[in-house]
Length: 637
Image (cartoon, rainbow, N blue to C red; front, side, top):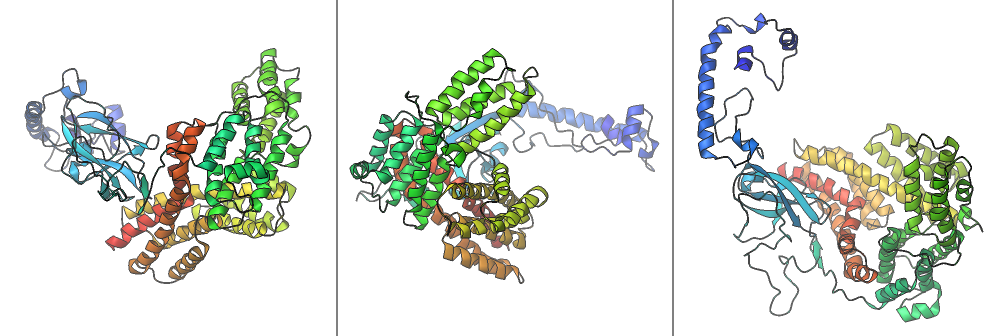
């Protein structure tokens, strides 16, 4: 009442009202001719009476849950207007319920969503988008009044329903006292009929979620769990190899040991694409500590690992190039340790020995470094050593009683160790290349330009700088010889691709936001899309001829008047590149990732999400988001 008498809006107070409110002095400017504060009291009293009647009516219509403090006070919002008793903000009434479902079947640019009865569930009209937490688990918290029916669906980037989990009339239900659900698998609704494969023994129907994972129109089996001959050779070789060095040596032997290659069915002269895919899967699990390494005794310094990496990389250089094999070799190389001359030296990484024998650190720290890091690293190095080093550093970096010179040397060693495991930051790699003047004189200006745009530019200018630098690297790779400079430059190129992914994610968010308003800025969309195509082409994930054609056409469209009718066919063509990549990833990995993961003892969830993670971490995934926003605008226009 006092808010109404004073003309005060608590949500958006007028600045001139604030001093009077603080001082307690009346602001006579609020009074207008014919309407004094005193004359407002009768209407205010009537409003108060109506509000009380509304409150009583609401309490009768919605009996509170016993013990719920929030349910006892179903008051109208203090918004400066009188709401009807049953009016609610979307998701604002009722109890909070966490919904959870498992779904691995999302297509490019799609998310899982929930829709059902009541404001909190969108009234069967506006799906509420869920979040992967982590994928393939999808969660969201909504407000629900009493019991409710609902169903899951897949939505495009614009929030529109692309596919229902079940086309029938059977819905899921939540009880009136539940505060969370665990609905199992997407598409499996209790009481709903299950779509069976045709009696003829043909492929399962698209509606059956229990057979494989599909993106676009392709549908590929997740595998029977039985490893093929080569995959079983990897599993057996891993089980017989305890240390990281032995496991890397097993991979190297497929390329160099005629007997081992013959027993595994591996063609050393012309490796099959699926065999390279299996090696990529294995090395991914190995480098991410999904496959554990053991200290097998012996004494093999990190130079042994570096030399093995050099041999594997050299063998990959000789693989007959196709789009698939080039992509797989690109995936394998960052999973190998560095074979820089610093690490092929007879006694590499000696700084940690000097650190462990410093006299300005306490005995407990000296013992921790010596026994858990130095001795292990110089005897039987593995990815777990980086974890140990990071633990030690995180424990001491903020300790005030630990000497500064020690911290300085430990920080330098951390950089060296990350470089050995190819885990260093992009900026550090480029700074190192500039200091060494690698890979050639022409790259210097392009790298400096990239740094400039990275710090002061925007997404478009950064993507342009990335494209120019990566194009130069691509031309240099064609004639460069095998060696440490080649490896370091390739790792910079991979880092640039990852940075481009981040910039394209930012651009995709801009396009999606525009599509929800007046529509996308066609010039901006085409510009960032052509940069995405350039990066995909340089990363061997897009057909070169088609990508070149689309880039040229985009630049031609941008040079004239842009309209939706002209852009729509281009968007459809570009989107086909995304779905082609998605299909290719499934054919390469799906049938073998689960059998390999199972045989290696990898967590089932980590193996199950491998392909989805591979797709969603590629620049083409961000391109699909950009294109979907454009298609939405084109349909409206």
